[in-house]
Image 1 (spheres, rainbow, N blue to C red):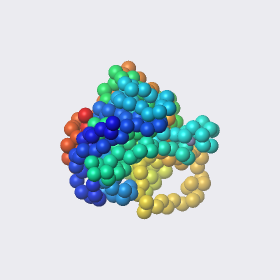
Image 2 (image 1 turned 180 degrees about the horizontal axis):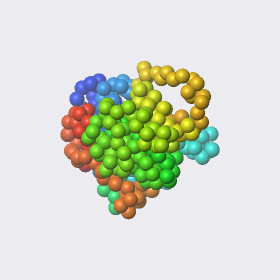
Image 3 (image 1 turned 90 degrees about the vertical axis):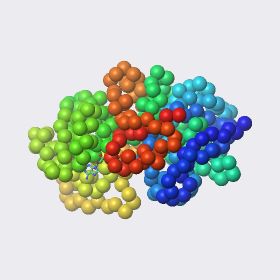
Length: 361
Ligand code: APR
Ligand code: ZN
Ligand code: ZN
């Protein structure tokens, strides 16, 4: 029986989000219905609302979530009812060239649930990042569900579904930060903060946090930064060089997504260092660099999509580290709110007041 549940939708470009009743169908083959317990408020939800991603309104927002599998469709083997799961953006196919070469992060044929959730009048909803979890229940592909230890609070586990995973993964998966490395993180919001935390986890000896906001630098210290640089008042390239014996950092993570901060990252790395771009640029941004400066260095210029994560490997591992007290994921939860406060949470995000507001259901 299709169910009616409460959810947060963005009906039209730029309009405030609203709580509406939606219809969640029974799971079809390969699908699962998940009872959502917690879902973080992410910038991408705001981008959807502003029409910055596409114009397939109305959107069902929310994509950083954990909950309990309620029912599964035919042929589902990944999870069963009662499992505590963290949701990811897309299920991989297992069949394409990337999957077969053991790089499912770059699967060509990812998928979400085939059926659509709707409004009461039958209007189809576009779920944010194929999830749509500011909802009492949502419908996803079973492969979007990863089972983790149910001892973890849903508000914390759910964070791994997006921003925190992106930042942690940018450092540990893409940047391959290792024991003794020097790391600089430019932009220490939720994503950069997680990169700082990931660098500490990986055993980095020096972790230099760079931001233009002193509040963010203070938080970065709590997350593991050993040095902080306010780039509004201090040249970050010079400061990073100075702090690394004149060499530059082994890994520089750019978590802002702007040409000027990318350039800082580029020039602040060691000759053999790695730059990881995890901040998301907008389509009109371009980068100009002397080609000779690109040529005259080794190392690697990389970008990190979703932290190069493998949900089935990374989500349970990070939840275990959290439960052992070795990874303070709880530090990212600034406040917990109800479904009706998502619009206010966008406002606070804009002001830079929060790392994460998390909706509890
Ligand atoms: N130099 C250094 N830091 C900067 C600069 C700058 N020129 N401009 C902004 N910042 C800092 C902000 O002060 C803030 O702390 O970058 C941080 C960005 O953090 P958030 O706004 O919390 O964004 P976050 O969720 O961390 O995402 C970072 O990745 O997912 C994308 O769209 C997202 O591009 C954004 C980036
Ligand atoms: Zn997100
Ligand atoms: Zn594939």
